[in-house]
Length: 209
Image 1 (cartoon, rainbow, N blue to C red):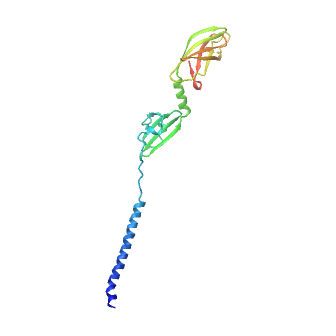
Image 2: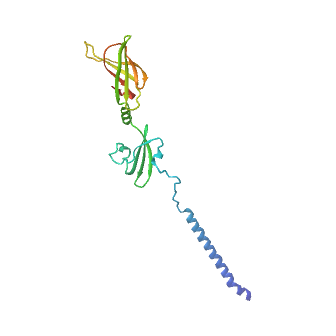
Image 3: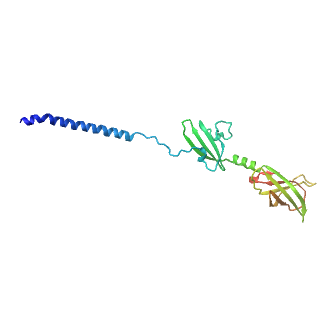
C-alpha cells in the first residue's frame, strides 16, 4: 500500500507531460499548414525586355502614341495608358499598352480600307513620260517610262484620244502593253489617231499621268 501512494505523483506528472506534448505537436502542425497555404507571388523567369519582341518582323512607327498629336491615337484612346506603342505589321497594326497599374496588354488590328488606300496612293505616286511615239503598220507604238515612289504594279494603260472635229467627246480605250524592264513599257493602240493623254493604271486603279 505504501508503494502505490509513493508512485501516484509520478503518474500524474507523466500524464501532464503527455498532454503538453500533444498540445505542442498540434501547435507546430497548425503553424506549418499556415505557411504552406500562404500566397506566393509568382516571378516571371524571362520577362520580355523590349516590347518589339511581341511583334517580330514588324516595324515600330510610334513609341508614345498618347495624345491626338499621334495620327494613330484612335488605337490607344480606349482608356488611360502610360505607354502605347504602335507597330506596322503590313496588313495589321500591332499595339502594346501599359496602363496605370502596370498591366501590359498586346493586340492586333486589321488596317481599314482608308489606311490601305492611303498606303497604295503613296506607293503609286509618280509620273509618266512618253519617250518615243510613232505609227507602225497602222498602230501607234509608244515607248513609255513610268516612275513611282514605291513598288506599284502597272496593270493597264488607258489612251485618251483627242476629240474629232464633229464632237467634243473624248474617247477612252485600253491599250496593249508589255514590259521592257527598268520601268519601261511598250504601249500599242489599235490605230494611229492622235491622243491627248496616256494614263498608266497602278494598284487598285490608281492613275499615274
